[in-house]
Length: 370
Image 1 (tube, rainbow, N blue to C red):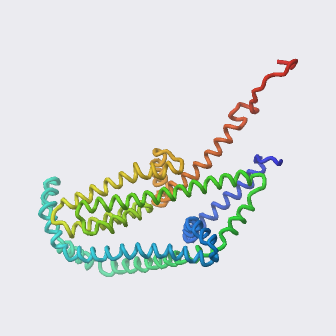
Image 2 (cartoon, rainbow, N blue to C red):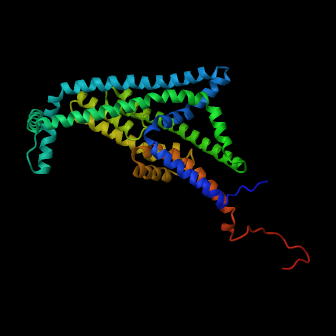
Image 3 (tube, rainbow, N blue to C red):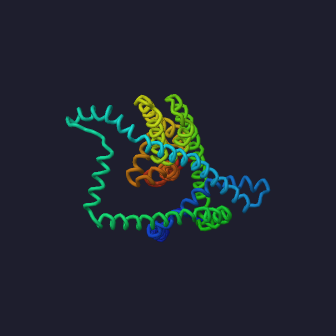
């Protein structure tokens, strides 16, 4: 049987190839977003496509149905979120004078005592000051705003164009999923293929557990926020709670969007600060429940990570890579954990761990020298 261990002459070309691949990915980073998104969505949707194909459905039709189901879910969420935002925003603008009166009567006096100065929230004064500053700036401010809008519009159109590629790439990726996987598998050196196949199988199982755990967390938080907001007396408790829970898989954005919707609705509905305090308590408890109980237990334990490891991974990836780092922290940590386990097994079976050649304990034969 060929030796599966890699020597220096094998490591150097493979290392150079890996380095070249990383450099290429870095150079092509700006255009990789739709392909990465399509690959992630394809991994999530492929089991559903396979299930439909086993029911004697043609694969192209199965792919179209799965993509259509995904689009319907996204559209349904948008149809729930957008009307609430538009309605609450319009109502808030109409009640802005009342809100300012409440701020001046309740918040401003306490804030003034704390800062030892007189404070008053005056929307008209702020608008007049802004208009005056704009007039003093002359054409310069308008030119800057125009340039910013032009550049910003170009970037937005570029992002929209890239996102429009996602369903197209996703369709062809799912259509030829098995062919792509088999071609990638053929690139693996024959001596290493059994080990790599076993490693990929473990990674696939871990990622599947991650997705199942994340779905449970989303449903649990949707129920928690909905029930909690109902107890605060919020009229739109159910839609806001469901939105918050279902979007928690996007770090910060899902939670922040739900909190903003709840606070806006509370400002318009409640005549006192008691309702807003209740909303703040619900969202504080929800964040603690997600960070320290649900995610470590329902996601971390499913993928073989200790709760402390989960918290550390979220903080470390967030520090290193920002928002994207928090988004991919747990699945990447799960994949790395599988790789580390294989490396540890190899290390414990290596001459380095045993102090030279592998030690084999056996009873000496009769007549053999000691």
